[in-house]
Structures are given as C-alpha cells and as structure tokens.
Image (cartoon, rainbow, N blue to C red; front, top):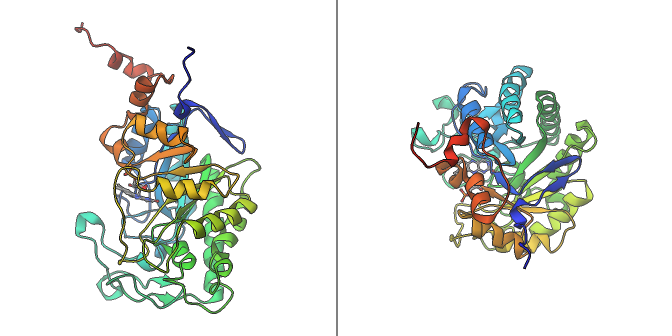
Length: 362
Ligand SMILES: Cc1cc2nc3c(=O)[nH]c(=O)nc-3n(C[C@H](O)[C@H](O)[C@H](O)COP(=O)(O)O)c2cc1C
C-alpha cells in the first residue's frame, strides 16, 4: 500500500503565499519591550522557531497605538521606528525559509495591566497606567471601567490599524492577522456581554461585528494584492448569553465575504465568569463548527501538543492548519520532530545537521 503523505505536511496557499506545511507558531506575548520596540528577544525567540522549521511564525500581539498595549512591556508598531526594528526580525526569519505574520492588536478594556512577571492586575492612571477604552462602560472582572469610545475615537482606531498594517508591509511581513479574540478591543465589540451600545457599533450581531469588519476593510485597502489576512476569533465566551460557535461561524462568514483568507479559532478571555472545558484540543469542536459554515481555511490552537494529535485534527476535517504555542516554547524544533514522526520532509538548518547524527564526535 502506498504511503499516504501526512496532511500536516501538505502545502497550503493563502492568497499569493504558499506555506510548505500546516504547523504554525501561535502568537505569544513576551512582555519584553520598552516603548513597544521589538529587540534582541524577539529576534532570538521568533528566529529559533524559524530555525526549527515552523512554516509560519506569528509575532506576539503588537499594539497599533500605545493605549492598545496590554502592558507597558508589549510590542508595538505605531511608528516607523517600530517597523524598522521589526524588519531585522522579519529578515532573519526569511533567511530560514519561514514566513512571518504580525498580529495587530488593541487590548481594549484589558489594557494598562502589569505584565505577568510583575504580578498582572490593573495599573491605574494614578499609578502610571492609562485610561482603558471599550464599547461600553463595563469592566472586565476587577479591571477599571473603560471609557466608552465615541464614534470619532472608533474611527481613529480604525485608522491606527490601517497605518500599522502599512508599516508592517514596509517591514516585510508576509501576512497580517487582526486580533479579534481573547477579550481585547475587537472581541469586546463582538460580544453582547461587553457591548451594550445602541449606535451603529452595537445592538444586533451584525452591528457588533461592524468595527471588526471596518478594520478588515481598512487594512485590506492598504495591503498588496495577494497578501493574506487572518482574523483570530474567540469562538466561545463560555458564558451563557455570550459568543458561541454558531455566532462565531456567522461572523466568519462575514469575514470571508470581506476577503479574509483564514479564520484562526480560539476562545475565551472576554468574561471572568467563563467556564472553559479545558482538555486536549478543547477548541477543536469550535473550529469544526466554524469550518462547516465557511469556504476559507480555518486554524485552531489549544492544547495540541503532539504531532499525531495535530495530524488527526486535520484528517478529521476539523481544521486546515494547527497553531501551537507552548509546545514550541518547550521545543522550538517541534516541527522537525513532527516531520520525523509523521513522515514529512523537512530539512534541518545546515548549521544543525549534526543534530540528526547520534554517533560519537569526532
Ligand atoms: C506566553 C503566551 C502568550 C500568549 N500571547 C498571545 C498573544 O499575544 N496573542 C494571542 O492571540 N494569543 C496569545 N496566547 C495564546 C496562544 O496563542 C494559544 O492560543 C494558547 O496558548 C493555546 O495554545 P497552546 O496550548 O499550544 O499553548 C499566548 C499564550 C502564551 C502561552
């Protein structure tokens, strides 16, 4: 019987970008920047995944303006100097044959927090933080009540996403992802639990998705033809009355109609009452539900730690690509191991060829 090639190691094409396999590095905040500037940490951290042969390496959530940072240590791209600093990371990743995408983000009502290394929790303006913003004056857990954005402030955030995208393109990124998940600004607008506006940005599902769609359109307008755009969604709030998979599927249909190339399915983060059924691949059923309603590819993340598990998700038709976060931290060469275990063809970097050799040295 002929060997069936692993689905994980089949190429996938998004717009004009073809990626050689479907095991991608999920975005991971590093809380290691000053003034949003990427530095040697991002170079080594993201560079190591490229050396490890991940097909696509995503940056951490990268703020489109300073108030959109989760913490003062977040990465950003709100000036040309940021774009220049990102270029060094992008260029290195490209030397390894990997692609690199940027996750453009605004933290909304969860901004102005302490980074994990300083214990999390809100940093209020009088403590050196800043006023957070959201669709409605509704707090996330014990975080401060956000300022309710006016229509003109919303327009300026749309502009900030477009300007950030323009800079990301100049820095050489291959793909742009809009962060619409995890209880940050765009998710705050999408969910009825956090959006109680009665203007054109709130109310029914379509109006709650209006800000996200406006940003998708504004970012697409500055992108070159064929450059892929991804949107990450929380496909469940895990709270009654919040977003569920059926609603996420309808949002995804709107995103598809507006030219988004892939929906990355995640969940949670928008309501502290969330009750998440955490377990291996716990977000896979959400991805499957979204994928059933759209014609574009769907990615999934969440406790996917083994090559066989990742392969099964794709073979079962629950998703088209697998994003992995923590396993890449534990093992930056996870993609190389996956290829070895499943029978994919990936080559180690020439400098690391000896890693394949278990005999005595010299
Ligand atoms: C250190 C760390 C930082 C993260 N930062 C981000 C982020 O910036 N943007 C985002 O969308 N998700 C972020 N996540 C969530 C991951 O992308 C991923 O969805 C989650 O960790 C589940 O995947 P895993 O089980 O493979 O770790 C982060 C996760 C970790 C562990």
